[in-house]
Image 1 (cartoon, rainbow, N blue to C red):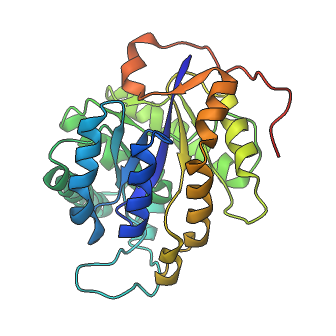
Image 2 (image 1 turned 180 degrees about the horizontal axis):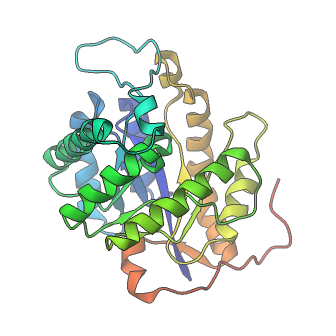
Length: 288
């Protein structure tokens, strides 16, 4: 069966979302999470996540680099909203004037992860896919190459043919990022899925099935479960997090993977067994 990583983004975004992700990890409804380290929830929740990862070596834990959203800090009340942090610098071509600031942010977030979690992350990606931005790519690749990072880095070229303007932009940025990183010896996931518009009318189960069916070994499906109380503190997708958490808690992903001849498994374990095999659909049509 083909190993697939199903990763819940945004551990550390809030305590409620972190607890929801931890519950899903412990029940093998998903097998990875990517962590935001800039708010008060991260140091409080990191020990429990480390315990879960130590108890199940099949789980993967990554660093979710954040350049675009301000998280609640210790002693603060609820946030009044998200705010961009240096967005112009992210979107601009790499220049010496902005590379220093971005490099410092990457190094600081890496140190915050290692300090609280006790070891390096298994993989690295970015909140709002900002790690793919032209202003970040060069600095991130240089940092990971310098420390001889042995894990993998997320590229976001969608494996399926689902249309969408976001997908087209991320496909192009991912190709550039992967080419830059592979020249420095970095490893990337070969497949990706999970992009969504966060609309109430989306059929998530059908969306996940379509993307998973197109993946090869090394595929990563991105999901966003959590606690919708975050929506009252400025989280723009807070109302969608509980819906995803409910679907995942019902065991939707393992059922889809079984239908497709895939299984939950951390990707580095199969890195030496790279294959062009794809998940094969056994059912005639997606549910719903």
